Image (cartoon, rainbow, N blue to C red; front, side):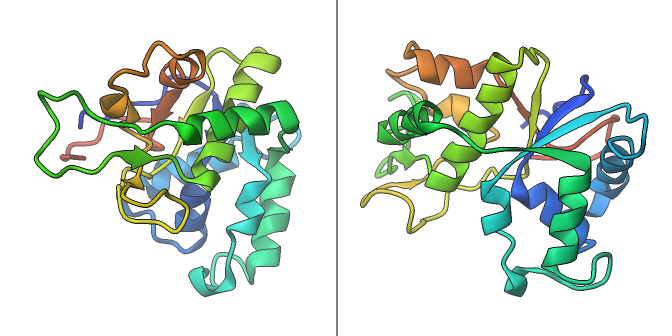
Length: 204
């Protein structure tokens, strides 16, 4: 995958970005994430951050390493101090349900033998529709959804016979559904890793 570099100062953060930073586990992305967070704090921030309320339900203590923050409550307070928390209304949640109702597949020419369709997990759907709400309802046209999620593992949140939909390259799995208004809106949402500069390595 070709790495996309951020060109905006408006970011919607996925939980995995926040947790990797908190656990000091963001590797080569550490500097850029730290910059994004620091420039979103203070009395005159130069960046604007949003997160979904679901993020707080995903801050499980067993996935957290004390160090940068004392505990998950300390981390939660920090997030609330620098980001706007989005809680979707029923119409937005119905949009999440519509996106989860699709079987996301690749075109026959690209699909491998025995390849299972993808299903958007509930958590991912809520994060994404919350970001779409920010982009559309508050007119933040250059909003970037920052995530590390590009896996297609099995999940308890997916339908039987499917795998989780990878978020970073979900456009590869839109065979037959790309013209749907909700899918089309999602395809127009910038999804990328937290990269502010060119990185001299393969992100594939």
